[in-house]
Length: 564
Image 1 (tube, rainbow, N blue to C red):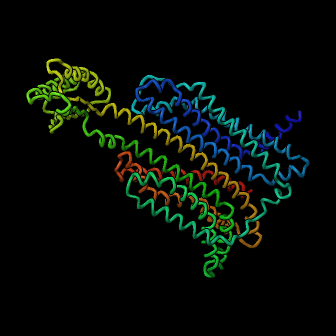
Image 2: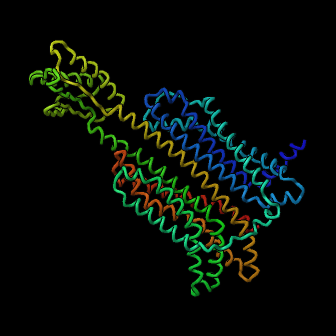
Image 3: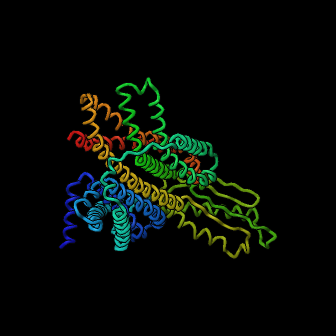
Protein backbone atom coordinates (compact mmCIF):
# COMPACT_ATOMS: atom_id res chain seq x y z
CA UNK A 1 0.00 0.00 0.00
CA UNK A 2 2.82 2.36 0.91
CA UNK A 3 4.57 1.63 -2.39
CA UNK A 4 1.33 2.53 -4.18
CA UNK A 5 1.43 5.88 -2.38
CA UNK A 6 4.87 6.65 -3.88
CA UNK A 7 3.69 5.64 -7.34
CA UNK A 8 0.62 7.85 -7.01
CA UNK A 9 2.74 10.78 -5.80
CA UNK A 10 5.14 10.29 -8.70
CA UNK A 11 2.27 10.21 -11.20
CA UNK A 12 0.83 13.41 -9.65
CA UNK A 13 4.23 15.11 -10.00
CA UNK A 14 4.42 14.15 -13.67
CA UNK A 15 0.88 15.32 -14.39
CA UNK A 16 1.43 18.59 -12.51
CA UNK A 17 4.72 19.37 -14.26
CA UNK A 18 3.69 18.36 -17.80
CA UNK A 19 5.83 21.13 -19.29
CA UNK A 20 8.94 19.30 -18.11
CA UNK A 21 8.03 15.65 -18.37
CA UNK A 22 6.16 15.60 -21.69
CA UNK A 23 9.20 16.76 -23.76
CA UNK A 24 11.35 14.22 -21.86
CA UNK A 25 8.92 11.44 -22.80
CA UNK A 26 8.86 12.60 -26.45
CA UNK A 27 12.67 12.69 -26.63
CA UNK A 28 12.84 9.20 -25.10
CA UNK A 29 10.30 8.01 -27.68
CA UNK A 30 12.36 9.42 -30.56
CA UNK A 31 15.63 7.90 -29.32
CA UNK A 32 14.12 4.51 -28.44
CA UNK A 33 12.17 4.37 -31.72
CA UNK A 34 15.30 5.08 -33.75
CA UNK A 35 17.25 2.54 -31.69
CA UNK A 36 14.64 -0.18 -32.30
CA UNK A 37 14.55 0.57 -36.03
CA UNK A 38 18.33 0.27 -36.37
CA UNK A 39 18.34 -2.95 -34.33
CA UNK A 40 15.50 -4.29 -36.48
CA UNK A 41 17.37 -3.49 -39.70
CA UNK A 42 20.53 -5.05 -38.31
CA UNK A 43 18.83 -8.44 -37.94
CA UNK A 44 16.28 -8.14 -40.74
CA UNK A 45 16.06 -11.19 -42.99
CA UNK A 46 14.33 -9.03 -45.60
CA UNK A 47 17.37 -6.75 -45.79
CA UNK A 48 20.04 -9.42 -45.32
CA UNK A 49 18.68 -11.48 -48.21
CA UNK A 50 19.10 -8.65 -50.72
CA UNK A 51 22.17 -8.45 -53.00
CA UNK A 52 23.33 -5.23 -51.32
CA UNK A 53 21.73 -5.86 -47.94
CA UNK A 54 24.69 -7.43 -46.15
CA UNK A 55 26.83 -4.38 -46.90
CA UNK A 56 24.19 -2.04 -45.44
CA UNK A 57 23.78 -4.28 -42.38
CA UNK A 58 27.53 -4.22 -41.74
CA UNK A 59 27.29 -0.41 -41.63
CA UNK A 60 24.47 -0.65 -39.09
CA UNK A 61 26.51 -2.91 -36.81
CA UNK A 62 29.30 -0.33 -36.48
CA UNK A 63 26.82 2.52 -36.31
CA UNK A 64 24.82 0.80 -33.60
CA UNK A 65 27.81 0.69 -31.28
CA UNK A 66 28.43 4.43 -31.67
CA UNK A 67 24.71 5.21 -31.49
CA UNK A 68 24.40 3.24 -28.23
CA UNK A 69 27.24 5.21 -26.63
CA UNK A 70 25.75 8.58 -27.62
CA UNK A 71 22.20 7.55 -26.67
CA UNK A 72 23.29 6.32 -23.24
CA UNK A 73 25.15 9.50 -22.33
CA UNK A 74 22.40 11.74 -23.72
CA UNK A 75 19.73 9.97 -21.70
CA UNK A 76 21.88 10.28 -18.57
CA UNK A 77 22.53 13.95 -19.38
CA UNK A 78 18.79 14.65 -19.76
CA UNK A 79 18.10 12.90 -16.44
CA UNK A 80 20.78 14.94 -14.68
CA UNK A 81 19.42 18.14 -16.20
CA UNK A 82 15.95 17.38 -14.84
CA UNK A 83 17.19 16.38 -11.39
CA UNK A 84 19.34 19.50 -11.17
CA UNK A 85 16.26 21.71 -11.61
CA UNK A 86 14.43 20.02 -8.72
CA UNK A 87 16.85 20.57 -5.85
CA UNK A 88 14.51 22.90 -4.01
CA UNK A 89 11.61 20.45 -4.39
CA UNK A 90 13.68 17.66 -2.84
CA UNK A 91 14.54 19.92 0.07
CA UNK A 92 10.87 20.70 0.65
CA UNK A 93 10.08 16.98 0.69
CA UNK A 94 12.57 16.56 3.52
CA UNK A 95 11.11 19.49 5.46
CA UNK A 96 7.61 18.00 5.07
CA UNK A 97 8.73 14.76 6.68
CA UNK A 98 9.69 12.48 3.79
CA UNK A 99 12.91 10.65 4.43
CA UNK A 100 15.58 10.42 1.77
CA UNK A 101 14.69 6.84 0.99
CA UNK A 102 11.08 7.92 0.43
CA UNK A 103 12.18 10.65 -1.99
CA UNK A 104 14.30 8.04 -3.74
CA UNK A 105 11.23 5.85 -4.21
CA UNK A 106 9.26 8.74 -5.68
CA UNK A 107 12.08 9.38 -8.13
CA UNK A 108 12.20 5.67 -8.95
CA UNK A 109 8.53 5.68 -9.97
CA UNK A 110 8.87 8.95 -11.88
CA UNK A 111 11.81 7.51 -13.80
CA UNK A 112 9.88 4.31 -14.46
CA UNK A 113 6.80 6.17 -15.73
CA UNK A 114 8.71 8.56 -18.01
CA UNK A 115 11.18 6.03 -19.45
CA UNK A 116 8.53 3.32 -19.73
CA UNK A 117 6.03 5.60 -21.47
CA UNK A 118 8.70 6.98 -23.80
CA UNK A 119 9.93 3.48 -24.64
CA UNK A 120 6.40 2.24 -25.36
CA UNK A 121 5.69 5.24 -27.62
CA UNK A 122 9.03 4.71 -29.37
CA UNK A 123 8.21 1.08 -30.12
CA UNK A 124 4.79 2.05 -31.47
CA UNK A 125 6.37 4.70 -33.71
CA UNK A 126 8.95 2.18 -34.93
CA UNK A 127 6.16 -0.21 -35.90
CA UNK A 128 4.20 2.54 -37.64
CA UNK A 129 7.11 4.13 -39.52
CA UNK A 130 9.27 1.01 -39.90
CA UNK A 131 8.08 0.17 -43.38
CA UNK A 132 8.57 3.76 -44.53
CA UNK A 133 12.13 3.75 -43.14
CA UNK A 134 12.80 0.40 -44.83
CA UNK A 135 11.50 1.74 -48.16
CA UNK A 136 13.73 4.83 -47.85
CA UNK A 137 16.73 2.62 -47.09
CA UNK A 138 16.07 0.44 -50.14
CA UNK A 139 15.86 3.57 -52.29
CA UNK A 140 19.17 4.82 -50.90
CA UNK A 141 21.02 1.55 -51.50
CA UNK A 142 19.55 1.20 -55.00
CA UNK A 143 17.48 -1.94 -54.44
CA UNK A 144 13.68 -2.13 -54.64
CA UNK A 145 12.49 -5.75 -54.33
CA UNK A 146 9.20 -6.93 -52.90
CA UNK A 147 10.63 -7.36 -49.40
CA UNK A 148 8.72 -6.69 -46.19
CA UNK A 149 10.26 -5.26 -43.07
CA UNK A 150 9.46 -7.05 -39.82
CA UNK A 151 11.14 -6.16 -36.53
CA UNK A 152 12.38 -9.40 -34.98
CA UNK A 153 12.29 -10.50 -31.36
CA UNK A 154 16.04 -10.04 -30.98
CA UNK A 155 15.71 -6.33 -31.85
CA UNK A 156 13.05 -5.89 -29.16
CA UNK A 157 15.19 -7.74 -26.64
CA UNK A 158 18.27 -5.60 -27.34
CA UNK A 159 16.23 -2.40 -27.08
CA UNK A 160 14.61 -3.46 -23.79
CA UNK A 161 17.97 -4.46 -22.31
CA UNK A 162 19.61 -1.20 -23.40
CA UNK A 163 16.92 1.09 -21.99
CA UNK A 164 16.62 -1.15 -18.94
CA UNK A 165 20.31 -0.49 -18.28
CA UNK A 166 19.68 3.25 -18.64
CA UNK A 167 16.79 3.01 -16.18
CA UNK A 168 18.86 1.14 -13.60
CA UNK A 169 21.80 3.55 -13.92
CA UNK A 170 19.72 6.75 -13.70
CA UNK A 171 17.64 5.38 -10.80
CA UNK A 172 20.78 4.54 -8.80
CA UNK A 173 22.31 7.91 -9.67
CA UNK A 174 19.17 9.79 -8.56
CA UNK A 175 19.02 7.85 -5.30
CA UNK A 176 22.68 8.62 -4.62
CA UNK A 177 22.18 12.35 -5.22
CA UNK A 178 19.27 12.43 -2.81
CA UNK A 179 21.18 10.48 -0.16
CA UNK A 180 24.22 12.77 -0.12
CA UNK A 181 22.25 16.05 -0.36
CA UNK A 182 21.67 18.43 2.55
CA UNK A 183 17.97 19.47 2.67
CA UNK A 184 18.64 23.11 3.68
CA UNK A 185 21.26 23.51 0.97
CA UNK A 186 18.79 22.10 -1.56
CA UNK A 187 16.16 24.68 -0.57
CA UNK A 188 18.65 27.54 -0.92
CA UNK A 189 20.28 26.17 -4.09
CA UNK A 190 18.11 28.02 -6.65
CA UNK A 191 18.85 31.34 -4.96
CA UNK A 192 22.56 30.77 -4.70
CA UNK A 193 24.52 32.77 -7.26
CA UNK A 194 27.85 31.83 -8.75
CA UNK A 195 30.88 33.63 -7.40
CA UNK A 196 33.27 35.35 -9.76
CA UNK A 197 36.44 33.40 -10.26
CA UNK A 198 39.87 34.96 -10.43
CA UNK A 199 40.61 32.58 -13.31
CA UNK A 200 38.03 34.07 -15.69
CA UNK A 201 40.55 36.03 -17.76
CA UNK A 202 43.28 33.35 -17.83
CA UNK A 203 40.72 30.72 -18.79
CA UNK A 204 39.26 32.99 -21.48
CA UNK A 205 42.73 33.48 -22.99
CA UNK A 206 43.46 29.72 -22.81
CA UNK A 207 40.11 28.91 -24.44
CA UNK A 208 40.73 31.42 -27.24
CA UNK A 209 44.22 30.01 -27.87
CA UNK A 210 42.87 26.45 -27.96
CA UNK A 211 40.12 27.35 -30.42
CA UNK A 212 42.44 29.35 -32.68
CA UNK A 213 44.94 26.48 -32.69
CA UNK A 214 42.20 23.98 -33.58
CA UNK A 215 40.96 26.25 -36.38
CA UNK A 216 44.51 26.71 -37.69
CA UNK A 217 45.31 22.99 -37.91
CA UNK A 218 41.86 22.21 -39.36
CA UNK A 219 42.29 24.85 -42.08
CA UNK A 220 45.92 24.19 -42.99
CA UNK A 221 45.80 20.37 -43.20
CA UNK A 222 46.64 19.38 -46.77
CA UNK A 223 46.66 15.57 -46.77
CA UNK A 224 43.88 13.02 -46.27
CA UNK A 225 45.98 10.81 -44.00
CA UNK A 226 46.93 13.76 -41.79
CA UNK A 227 43.29 14.90 -41.63
CA UNK A 228 42.14 11.48 -40.45
CA UNK A 229 44.92 11.39 -37.86
CA UNK A 230 44.27 14.79 -36.27
CA UNK A 231 40.48 15.02 -36.65
CA UNK A 232 39.47 13.46 -33.33
CA UNK A 233 42.16 15.27 -31.28
CA UNK A 234 40.94 18.52 -32.84
CA UNK A 235 37.33 17.61 -31.99
CA UNK A 236 38.30 17.18 -28.32
CA UNK A 237 40.18 20.48 -28.42
CA UNK A 238 37.18 22.33 -29.92
CA UNK A 239 34.79 20.82 -27.35
CA UNK A 240 36.99 21.91 -24.43
CA UNK A 241 37.54 25.37 -25.94
CA UNK A 242 33.81 25.81 -26.54
CA UNK A 243 32.94 25.06 -22.91
CA UNK A 244 35.68 27.39 -21.65
CA UNK A 245 34.73 30.26 -23.95
CA UNK A 246 31.01 29.94 -23.27
CA UNK A 247 31.65 30.29 -19.55
CA UNK A 248 34.79 32.33 -19.02
CA UNK A 249 35.15 33.97 -22.44
CA UNK A 250 31.62 35.37 -22.54
CA UNK A 251 31.79 36.67 -18.96
CA UNK A 252 35.22 38.22 -19.60
CA UNK A 253 33.90 40.01 -22.69
CA UNK A 254 30.83 41.29 -20.82
CA UNK A 255 33.02 42.51 -17.95
CA UNK A 256 35.13 44.35 -20.51
CA UNK A 257 31.96 46.10 -21.71
CA UNK A 258 31.03 46.75 -18.09
CA UNK A 259 34.30 48.59 -17.53
CA UNK A 260 33.39 51.08 -20.27
CA UNK A 261 31.57 54.07 -18.75
CA UNK A 262 30.20 55.12 -22.13
CA UNK A 263 28.55 51.74 -22.72
CA UNK A 264 27.66 50.51 -19.25
CA UNK A 265 26.36 53.63 -17.49
CA UNK A 266 23.16 53.90 -19.48
CA UNK A 267 19.78 52.51 -18.38
CA UNK A 268 19.65 50.00 -21.21
CA UNK A 269 23.35 49.11 -21.05
CA UNK A 270 23.41 48.72 -17.28
CA UNK A 271 20.47 46.31 -17.21
CA UNK A 272 21.36 44.39 -20.37
CA UNK A 273 25.02 43.77 -19.49
CA UNK A 274 24.34 42.91 -15.84
CA UNK A 275 21.57 40.52 -16.86
CA UNK A 276 23.70 38.90 -19.56
CA UNK A 277 26.57 38.27 -17.15
CA UNK A 278 24.24 36.42 -14.80
CA UNK A 279 22.60 34.51 -17.64
CA UNK A 280 25.92 33.35 -19.10
CA UNK A 281 27.10 32.17 -15.69
CA UNK A 282 23.96 30.09 -15.28
CA UNK A 283 23.59 28.82 -18.84
CA UNK A 284 27.15 28.46 -20.15
CA UNK A 285 27.32 24.68 -19.86
CA UNK A 286 23.96 24.09 -21.53
CA UNK A 287 24.70 26.58 -24.31
CA UNK A 288 28.05 24.93 -24.99
CA UNK A 289 26.30 21.53 -25.12
CA UNK A 290 23.78 22.89 -27.63
CA UNK A 291 26.65 24.23 -29.75
CA UNK A 292 28.55 20.92 -29.70
CA UNK A 293 25.46 18.85 -30.48
CA UNK A 294 24.53 21.20 -33.33
CA UNK A 295 28.02 20.95 -34.81
CA UNK A 296 27.98 17.16 -34.55
CA UNK A 297 24.59 17.08 -36.29
CA UNK A 298 25.77 19.22 -39.21
CA UNK A 299 29.08 17.35 -39.61
CA UNK A 300 27.34 13.96 -39.56
CA UNK A 301 24.52 14.81 -41.97
CA UNK A 302 26.59 16.91 -44.40
CA UNK A 303 29.44 14.37 -44.44
CA UNK A 304 27.22 11.38 -45.20
CA UNK A 305 25.23 13.45 -47.70
CA UNK A 306 28.44 14.39 -49.54
CA UNK A 307 29.50 10.75 -49.77
CA UNK A 308 26.09 9.69 -51.04
CA UNK A 309 25.78 12.42 -53.67
CA UNK A 310 29.39 11.95 -54.80
CA UNK A 311 29.26 8.14 -54.87
CA UNK A 312 29.35 7.93 -58.69
CA UNK A 313 32.25 10.38 -58.86
CA UNK A 314 34.21 8.30 -56.34
CA UNK A 315 33.37 5.13 -58.20
CA UNK A 316 34.75 6.51 -61.45
CA UNK A 317 38.05 7.20 -59.74
CA UNK A 318 38.51 3.45 -59.32
CA UNK A 319 36.67 2.29 -62.44
CA UNK A 320 36.79 4.87 -65.26
CA UNK A 321 35.02 2.54 -67.74
CA UNK A 322 32.01 0.28 -67.47
CA UNK A 323 33.95 -2.84 -68.42
CA UNK A 324 37.69 -3.54 -68.51
CA UNK A 325 39.00 -6.82 -69.96
CA UNK A 326 42.69 -7.32 -69.40
CA UNK A 327 45.06 -10.05 -70.59
CA UNK A 328 48.30 -9.96 -68.65
CA UNK A 329 51.27 -11.81 -70.19
CA UNK A 330 53.27 -14.02 -67.85
CA UNK A 331 57.06 -13.95 -67.68
CA UNK A 332 58.69 -16.25 -70.25
CA UNK A 333 61.25 -17.36 -67.65
CA UNK A 334 58.44 -19.11 -65.73
CA UNK A 335 58.09 -21.63 -68.55
CA UNK A 336 54.98 -20.23 -70.18
CA UNK A 337 54.51 -19.87 -73.92
CA UNK A 338 53.53 -16.34 -74.85
CA UNK A 339 50.90 -16.03 -77.59
CA UNK A 340 51.94 -14.94 -81.03
CA UNK A 341 50.53 -11.76 -82.54
CA UNK A 342 48.10 -13.84 -84.62
CA UNK A 343 46.94 -15.79 -81.55
CA UNK A 344 46.46 -12.58 -79.57
CA UNK A 345 44.43 -11.06 -82.38
CA UNK A 346 42.28 -14.19 -82.45
CA UNK A 347 41.73 -13.98 -78.68
CA UNK A 348 40.86 -10.29 -79.02
CA UNK A 349 38.40 -10.95 -81.84
CA UNK A 350 36.68 -13.72 -79.89
CA UNK A 351 36.57 -11.57 -76.73
CA UNK A 352 34.78 -8.73 -78.50
CA UNK A 353 32.43 -11.13 -80.27
CA UNK A 354 31.44 -12.83 -77.01
CA UNK A 355 30.78 -9.52 -75.23
CA UNK A 356 28.77 -8.18 -78.18
CA UNK A 357 26.70 -11.37 -78.20
CA UNK A 358 26.15 -11.23 -74.42
CA UNK A 359 25.08 -7.58 -74.67
CA UNK A 360 22.75 -8.34 -77.56
CA UNK A 361 21.11 -11.18 -75.61
CA UNK A 362 20.31 -8.65 -72.87
CA UNK A 363 18.94 -6.00 -75.19
CA UNK A 364 22.03 -3.76 -75.44
CA UNK A 365 23.43 -2.93 -78.89
CA UNK A 366 27.21 -2.48 -79.10
CA UNK A 367 29.74 -2.98 -81.91
CA UNK A 368 33.50 -3.37 -82.30
CA UNK A 369 33.84 0.38 -82.84
CA UNK A 370 32.69 0.95 -79.24
CA UNK A 371 35.78 -0.83 -77.86
CA UNK A 372 39.01 0.92 -77.00
CA UNK A 373 42.01 -1.43 -77.23
CA UNK A 374 45.35 -0.70 -75.61
CA UNK A 375 48.43 -2.93 -75.94
CA UNK A 376 51.58 -2.71 -73.86
CA UNK A 377 54.64 -4.93 -73.41
CA UNK A 378 52.95 -7.14 -70.81
CA UNK A 379 49.21 -6.71 -71.38
CA UNK A 380 46.39 -6.11 -73.80
CA UNK A 381 43.35 -4.24 -72.45
CA UNK A 382 39.81 -3.66 -73.75
CA UNK A 383 37.71 -0.74 -72.47
CA UNK A 384 34.06 -0.25 -73.24
CA UNK A 385 31.32 2.01 -71.88
CA UNK A 386 27.66 1.12 -72.26
CA UNK A 387 25.56 4.25 -71.64
CA UNK A 388 21.99 3.92 -70.40
CA UNK A 389 22.62 0.36 -69.23
CA UNK A 390 21.08 -0.22 -65.82
CA UNK A 391 22.82 -2.20 -63.14
CA UNK A 392 20.70 -5.34 -63.49
CA UNK A 393 21.31 -5.52 -67.24
CA UNK A 394 25.01 -4.79 -66.84
CA UNK A 395 25.46 -7.61 -64.32
CA UNK A 396 23.47 -9.96 -66.56
CA UNK A 397 25.81 -9.16 -69.48
CA UNK A 398 28.88 -9.85 -67.35
CA UNK A 399 27.47 -13.09 -65.95
CA UNK A 400 26.57 -14.44 -69.38
CA UNK A 401 29.91 -13.34 -70.85
CA UNK A 402 32.32 -14.47 -68.13
CA UNK A 403 32.04 -18.31 -68.42
CA UNK A 404 32.85 -18.30 -72.13
CA UNK A 405 35.65 -15.89 -71.50
CA UNK A 406 37.44 -18.19 -69.07
CA UNK A 407 36.67 -21.34 -71.04
CA UNK A 408 38.39 -19.97 -74.12
CA UNK A 409 41.77 -19.73 -72.36
CA UNK A 410 41.61 -23.34 -71.27
CA UNK A 411 41.38 -24.83 -74.76
CA UNK A 412 44.09 -27.43 -75.28
CA UNK A 413 45.02 -26.27 -78.77
CA UNK A 414 46.93 -23.33 -77.25
CA UNK A 415 48.82 -25.40 -74.69
CA UNK A 416 50.16 -23.59 -71.59
CA UNK A 417 49.61 -20.02 -72.75
CA UNK A 418 51.21 -17.42 -70.52
CA UNK A 419 48.05 -15.32 -70.21
CA UNK A 420 46.26 -14.32 -67.03
CA UNK A 421 42.75 -13.15 -67.94
CA UNK A 422 41.00 -10.59 -65.73
CA UNK A 423 37.72 -8.78 -66.05
CA UNK A 424 36.60 -5.86 -63.93
CA UNK A 425 33.31 -4.05 -64.27
CA UNK A 426 31.57 -1.13 -62.63
CA UNK A 427 28.21 -2.73 -61.90
CA UNK A 428 28.99 -4.93 -58.91
CA UNK A 429 31.23 -2.20 -57.42
CA UNK A 430 28.44 0.31 -57.91
CA UNK A 431 26.04 -1.98 -56.06
CA UNK A 432 28.51 -2.26 -53.17
CA UNK A 433 29.19 1.50 -53.09
CA UNK A 434 25.53 2.43 -53.23
CA UNK A 435 24.76 0.04 -50.39
CA UNK A 436 27.64 1.35 -48.28
CA UNK A 437 27.05 5.07 -48.84
CA UNK A 438 23.27 4.67 -48.74
CA UNK A 439 23.62 2.89 -45.40
CA UNK A 440 25.94 5.66 -44.18
CA UNK A 441 23.45 8.38 -45.16
CA UNK A 442 20.65 6.43 -43.49
CA UNK A 443 22.72 6.17 -40.31
CA UNK A 444 23.66 9.85 -40.61
CA UNK A 445 19.99 10.81 -40.71
CA UNK A 446 19.29 8.70 -37.62
CA UNK A 447 22.26 10.21 -35.79
CA UNK A 448 20.99 13.63 -36.79
CA UNK A 449 17.62 12.77 -35.27
CA UNK A 450 19.36 11.75 -32.03
CA UNK A 451 21.38 14.97 -31.83
CA UNK A 452 18.35 17.05 -32.81
CA UNK A 453 16.07 15.45 -30.20
CA UNK A 454 18.53 16.20 -27.40
CA UNK A 455 19.25 19.72 -28.71
CA UNK A 456 15.54 20.58 -28.89
CA UNK A 457 14.99 19.19 -25.40
CA UNK A 458 17.82 21.29 -23.94
CA UNK A 459 16.52 24.42 -25.70
CA UNK A 460 13.04 23.72 -24.33
CA UNK A 461 14.28 23.23 -20.78
CA UNK A 462 16.36 26.40 -21.05
CA UNK A 463 13.27 28.32 -22.09
CA UNK A 464 11.45 27.04 -18.99
CA UNK A 465 14.40 27.91 -16.75
CA UNK A 466 14.71 31.36 -18.30
CA UNK A 467 10.97 31.89 -17.87
CA UNK A 468 10.95 31.19 -14.14
CA UNK A 469 14.09 33.28 -13.61
CA UNK A 470 12.76 36.20 -15.68
CA UNK A 471 9.39 36.20 -13.96
CA UNK A 472 11.05 37.40 -10.76
CA UNK A 473 13.33 39.74 -12.73
CA UNK A 474 10.30 41.12 -14.57
CA UNK A 475 8.64 42.08 -11.27
CA UNK A 476 11.84 43.66 -9.87
CA UNK A 477 12.45 45.81 -12.95
CA UNK A 478 8.88 47.06 -12.86
CA UNK A 479 9.26 48.01 -9.19
CA UNK A 480 12.36 50.11 -9.93
CA UNK A 481 10.45 52.22 -12.45
CA UNK A 482 10.70 50.52 -15.86
CA UNK A 483 7.47 50.17 -17.84
CA UNK A 484 6.27 46.92 -19.42
CA UNK A 485 7.60 47.79 -22.87
CA UNK A 486 11.13 48.52 -21.60
CA UNK A 487 11.20 45.40 -19.44
CA UNK A 488 10.02 43.14 -22.28
CA UNK A 489 12.50 44.69 -24.70
CA UNK A 490 15.40 44.22 -22.28
CA UNK A 491 14.58 40.63 -21.38
CA UNK A 492 13.79 39.67 -24.99
CA UNK A 493 17.13 40.98 -26.21
CA UNK A 494 18.97 39.02 -23.51
CA UNK A 495 17.11 35.79 -24.25
CA UNK A 496 17.70 36.18 -27.99
CA UNK A 497 21.43 36.67 -27.43
CA UNK A 498 21.65 33.69 -25.09
CA UNK A 499 19.89 31.30 -27.41
CA UNK A 500 21.46 32.44 -30.68
CA UNK A 501 25.07 32.50 -29.46
CA UNK A 502 25.28 28.67 -29.84
CA UNK A 503 23.96 28.90 -33.40
CA UNK A 504 26.52 31.56 -34.34
CA UNK A 505 29.37 29.58 -32.79
CA UNK A 506 28.17 26.39 -34.54
CA UNK A 507 28.28 28.11 -37.93
CA UNK A 508 31.76 29.45 -37.14
CA UNK A 509 32.92 25.92 -36.22
CA UNK A 510 31.59 24.64 -39.57
CA UNK A 511 33.41 27.30 -41.59
CA UNK A 512 36.77 26.05 -40.34
CA UNK A 513 35.70 22.40 -40.27
CA UNK A 514 34.87 22.44 -43.98
CA UNK A 515 38.53 22.20 -45.03
CA UNK A 516 39.44 19.23 -42.83
CA UNK A 517 36.16 17.52 -43.78
CA UNK A 518 37.07 17.83 -47.46
CA UNK A 519 40.50 16.34 -46.74
CA UNK A 520 38.97 13.43 -44.81
CA UNK A 521 36.45 12.71 -47.56
CA UNK A 522 39.37 12.80 -49.99
CA UNK A 523 40.44 9.49 -48.44
CA UNK A 524 37.29 8.07 -50.09
CA UNK A 525 38.37 9.63 -53.41
CA UNK A 526 35.78 12.40 -53.06
CA UNK A 527 37.78 15.43 -54.16
CA UNK A 528 34.95 17.77 -55.11
CA UNK A 529 35.33 20.60 -52.59
CA UNK A 530 32.41 22.48 -54.15
CA UNK A 531 30.09 19.52 -53.56
CA UNK A 532 31.23 19.14 -49.95
CA UNK A 533 30.88 22.88 -49.31
CA UNK A 534 27.42 22.86 -50.89
CA UNK A 535 26.27 19.99 -48.67
CA UNK A 536 27.62 21.78 -45.59
CA UNK A 537 25.89 25.00 -46.65
CA UNK A 538 22.53 23.29 -47.29
CA UNK A 539 22.71 21.44 -43.97
CA UNK A 540 23.66 24.62 -42.08
CA UNK A 541 20.82 26.58 -43.69
CA UNK A 542 18.28 23.83 -42.94
CA UNK A 543 19.50 23.50 -39.36
CA UNK A 544 19.47 27.29 -38.80
CA UNK A 545 15.86 27.47 -40.03
CA UNK A 546 14.89 24.53 -37.83
CA UNK A 547 16.75 26.02 -34.85
CA UNK A 548 14.88 29.31 -35.19
CA UNK A 549 11.56 27.49 -35.59
CA UNK A 550 12.25 25.47 -32.42
CA UNK A 551 13.23 28.64 -30.56
CA UNK A 552 10.07 30.53 -31.50
CA UNK A 553 7.85 27.53 -30.74
CA UNK A 554 9.42 26.96 -27.32
CA UNK A 555 9.40 30.69 -26.58
CA UNK A 556 5.62 30.48 -26.23
CA UNK A 557 6.13 28.44 -23.06
CA UNK A 558 8.60 31.06 -21.86
CA UNK A 559 6.15 33.94 -22.36
CA UNK A 560 3.33 32.08 -20.63
CA UNK A 561 5.53 31.60 -17.56
CA UNK A 562 6.74 35.23 -17.51
CA UNK A 563 3.28 36.74 -17.99
CA UNK A 564 1.67 34.59 -15.33
